[in-house]
Length: 119
Image (cartoon, helix red, strand yellow):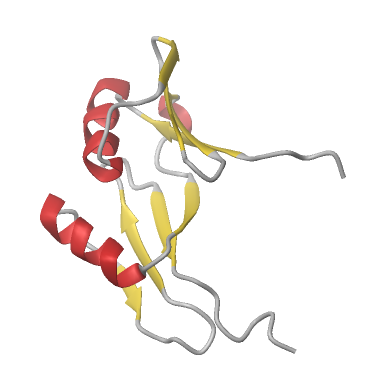
């Protein structure tokens, strides 16, 4: 395998409105704006989220973000006023919470996996 990283693409209807929403979610402006219809954020441990205007596909994207602490992430979401649509407190395998952006794209927060790789 020659893969080095991954980029998640999220289709939206209005790029300007999406940038405002994702800035609130991520806590900072995009790292790059390679085109008028695209904004992207890079994460410190690798990977990118790219938000792009493509009206016909808006709302059909899903991205999973690995977080160090789901509890901390839920507290951050509460501060921004972003509602959680699904939350599982199960620690048997790993915790998951789901939100949706204004277009209906799903953002899944996955807490650390537990017991999955333990053999």
